[in-house]
Length: 367
Image 1 (cartoon, rainbow, N blue to C red):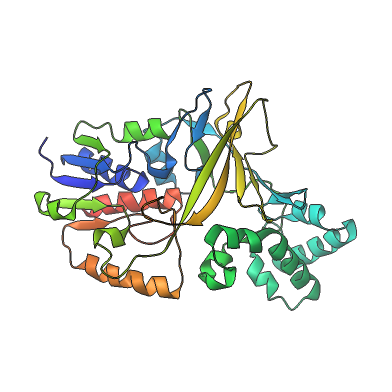
Image 2 (cartoon, rainbow, N blue to C red):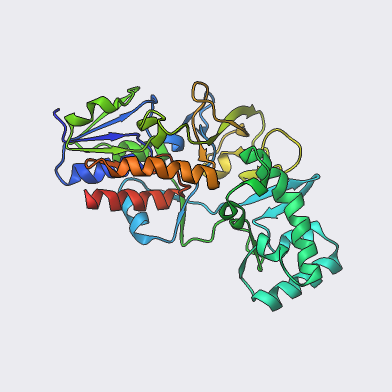
């Protein structure tokens, strides 16, 4: 099929744009260097028949009805509200930090005192930045915030990013919240769920339009750009420009899967480990998928340096230097009239899944 448009990368960004362009009558060639659809949302059955997500847990959540309704054309949703714990010195602590977490970390009197001060200061059901609390003039609030930060977030963040938190973009640390309620849900969005038959099935339907030709295991070659009236590129932007301004810094992850010969392994889907363990969290997939099986499957995540020949980039490492470096690539991208750079790697930006879907819909409309 002679294509009008080329879409590079078939995670959410690429798949959404490809579907929208195809539905508007464009002929689309959609390629991915990996051998599967869905990018890092790819899931599949393991050897025992348990549905696992090969690149760690992905829970879809959004307050954006347009995004939810759009994706609902391609999947039914399994209702799911995410719950997370942290293993703090053997104690199970609810995340995100809330009033229950205070009960689990501090004495009864301390927890009551702090809870009362938090509600008096911020009101019930408020989302408060731990970093904001660490600047509090109130001695008790500052002390508790410092302790929570050290016990739950400092070492976890250092493991996740490979550098001390102080060297990261402040916006990353500002994302760490404390809630002045007892709501155990990790996300509070109106719409939450897991694709009932898995992410891969949803991507197959997204890319199933007759105007889309899907090609896997294919590397993108910028030299062929002139063959298309429009290119949508979702890979690392520094790769596109052959690293002419140096390689942008990314963090990567390794995943170690394990079959467990019992129905359940842990109480919730995800348990974070902020201690000295090499891994950051353990996910048990049956909590996410609702599967019934006599065994269970878990994965441990080990953050690691991104090495282009060894692993894939997962998260852009944002700081002052990398932002300035990215701006050089942004200036190069602005010179290209028929190439749109979309998504986490192409825009060197952390996107939640719903945000990247919204971005994909917007780019498709503009094209």
